[in-house]
Structures are given as C-alpha cells and as structure tokens.
Image 1: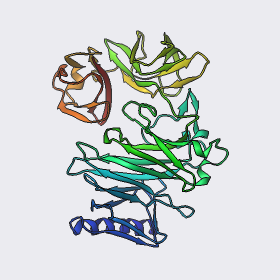
Image 2: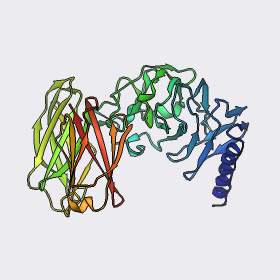
Image 3: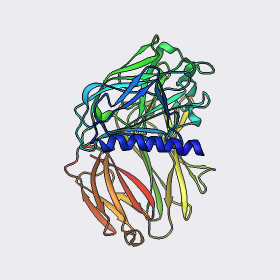
Image 4: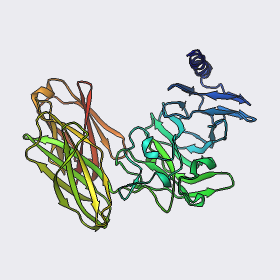
Length: 411
C-alpha cells in the first residue's frame, strides 16, 4: 500500500510539473523506470513530440487496462511521438507521427497490457465483445497483447502516419499458432462492433519486432488494437443487434454488411442473462456484400427485465454471437424508436414514467461522433434527421443512472 501511494504521488507530481509550466515542461527518463499501477494516470500537458524523452534504457511500464498515459497532443506537430512502453524483459515503444487534428482540448489516452495466458478472449478490453473468426475463438492467432490509442476532445482527430507497434517474441510463442511474418494490425470499432470494417495496410519487420501502418485517417481511430496472423484475421459482418419494447412486444433488429456462406440467424432470450433459449430464426442471405436489415418480434416476452442476443450460423455450422441487449417490460421506462429505417425524422417513443425522469439523449454517428444532445420532454419526441447522410446512427438515452442505446438506419 505504501508503494502505491508513493507511486501515486510521483504521478501527481509529474502531472503538476507539466501543468505549472504552461505545458512546456518535459518528462525526461534517464535510465529509470516509471511504473503506472492501480489505475493511475501519468498526465503530459506539453503537446510537443519531445515532451516524453527517454535517455538510455528507461521506459514507462503500463501493463494494465487502466494504467494510462494521457498526453495532450493537440493537433500534432507532424514529428515522431514515442510512447516508451516497456517492462523488465522488453522495450515496447509505440510510435507515430500526428498532424492535422482540430480540437483545443485534444488528447490521447495510451495504455497497453499483456494477456496472462494465450487465450485473449479471457482478457478482452472494455467494449470489445469477441476475438472470434467464423464463430470460433481466434485467440491462438492473436499476439498476447492489446494496445489502447484513444483520442478525446477532438472535432477532427489527427491523421497518424508511421504508426508502429512493438511486440516481444514470447507474445506470439506456443501455444499460439502464429507465423510471425504474417502479423498485421487490427482495431476494434466499438460503434459497429467490428474488427474488420476497416483494415489498414500493415508491414512487419521481424528484426525489430514491429508492425507498421503507413497512414491512418483520424476518422478510423478507435480505442483498442491488437496484432493478428493474416491467415486468420478477426472478421465480423454484424453492424448491430438491437432489442426494444414496442406495444408490450420485443422487436429485435440487426444489420449486416457482408455475408459469406451464411445459413440463418437465431434470436435467443434469457431471464437472468446466463441461461438462454432460442425463440426463432430468420433465413440469411447466403452470400452478400451489401447492407442487409433483419428483424424478428418476440410476441410473448418475459415480464420485467430480460436479455436478448443473436446467433449467426454459417452453412458449415460455424457460428458467432452478438452482444447481449437488455430490455424492461415493467413500468413506463421503455423507450423505442420509430420508424426504423427512417428518412426525414425519427420518433423517440417513451412512456410517461420515462419522460418524468427527464432522460438525456445523445445522437451519435457510426464513427462515434456526437451530433446532438437534448432532453426527452414528451412521450413522442420527434428528431429531425433529414440533413443526415444515409447510414447507421445510435441514440444513447440516460436516466436513473442507466444508459439505453438504440440504433436506427437513415435511408
């Protein structure tokens, strides 16, 4: 406990140093080690790419989901930024060039951590629902590490060039079945729940144990990254799965952007979120590279709170699950959208019990950009969406310390 407080004070002191000098101070690690533990954060307010400088064999040890470096990079000066991650065995720097960002308060949150075993699916980062390929666990084809690269406070996120991830030999060793020369970078899109909606071109240098991405537009930056064997990437065709109450029934809906050898979808429900039962199936397209929309209605749902998830099944029997959606049929707190898909407007339909709680709604596009913030004031709250481009959008509604996220399609 004493060492934790000592470390917390060190991190606080470093943060205060950078703040008290109007963002001009630098953190110079001269052959030493800064260890961030217990969810602490090292704050760097100097936006210059040399604000963190390593001399000799020094490094910063994160090795945890919540052990963060928060660097107020701002727009980026176009030069090379180095996040000097490492541990007692390896120096694992994360490097990139950043430029063209817009946002006075723009900053990046960085962290990295190894999985305790080869089975990455047991150590998923927050918001990541799977590391599956064709419905089966793909952990053996993933390096045993995740990286967080999370931009915040930007209206336009910076473009990153020469983004380089460094890994250790032990992180792809057996029982993983990885061909090192096949490693490439993938990032999780938390809005689309997808690893494969965008896969940047990567190159690998096995001599330096690094995977490099030449360029990635800021619009494609999300929170979490890993490295996978290109012979077995992390695909997912499901854009979203949603469950919502409508006239005492539960309407489930989902959308795909790509299907290969798909057979059918099954909707499963549960009263406790653990034991699920199959309540119906819908035929899949088989093969498709266009956007397809599906729906299935549960006409006799459980009373109170229940849970729904989707199972997509291929013709060869492989399958994959969606995230779990929670609904509540009791009281007036049920909220759903109509029409869906929509063209000129979307209506947020809420019971008076929900309206009385003054729920706050946030409208996001598929990239996670906040488009509108408003309070729901009626049981039939109409939102104009005529100016929005076609695509998928999320409305996040918060009330009573709970958040309900609903998705709709703008045609």
